[in-house]
Image 1 (cartoon, rainbow, N blue to C red):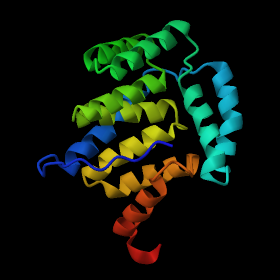
Image 2: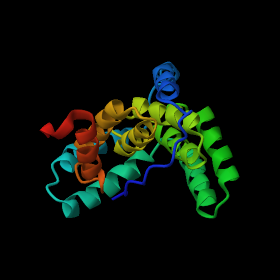
Image 3: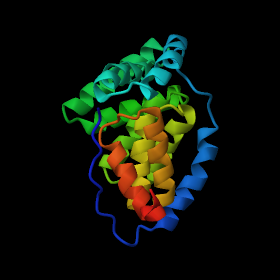
Image 4: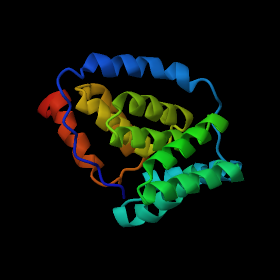
Length: 200
């Protein structure tokens, strides 16, 4: 399961106020399009998400998580799915410019497809463009509230900016959806001690 990345260094001038302002602005952006996901995928996710939450062990959770992540990628549009494959292939060979352009095209033609926004968010984060990363990841979780990866990724960025309380809420949301998401339980415990003290 996806490992949590170590925090990046954030200069002091990139403040909590900046992150908070972005966070408050993003729900307006997220309201522009209805969620888009293949109907079959929605039905399967309705069955798999409760199983993932109650898997009982990392070994039992792994195949369920794999299925869930595959379903998140099913937009219901063959052309959109093909563009997603091409974007992933471009990224795999290091052509981030082509991948970024393809993903932008996808969010233009399918603005309700959460997974495209999530991937755009991670690409923005990798490029140290935290403003766009926060916007895109927030869009992803608004369109797909079951996307545990996006919750965890957004939480990590907010924690870096010092918004540990909000970050903890999102880490806990991700953990509730996927209790065996690799490394996330330790992150929650560590951040909870900082936010809430030793009462946990």
